[in-house]
Image 1 (cartoon, rainbow, N blue to C red):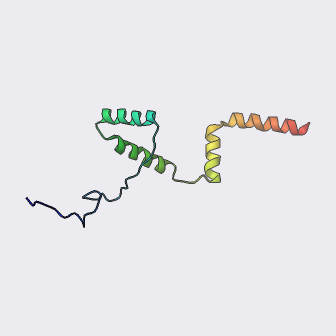
Image 2: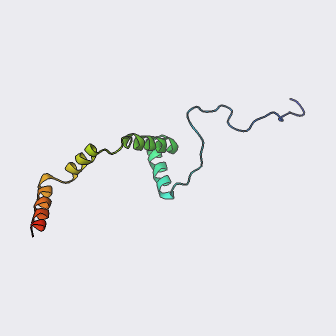
Length: 97
């Protein structure tokens, strides 16, 4: 073993950089973090991995922009035909007055 080591050309950071990942600092609500830790412990995985998977799933789910046809489909699903007919007849009655 040497009496002295030269670290003048050393670099800070991970010895083996991980590809495709970036270390960041964010603020997460305590309740959200605790829930992820609890679920990760039950699943036998890491909470950060679980959070990353949840974010990926959200991005995949919300990847497509809302177009006019998508908006029409959502409206049809959310408002049944009967309630739309009622609204139309009510609107016609108001304009006829």
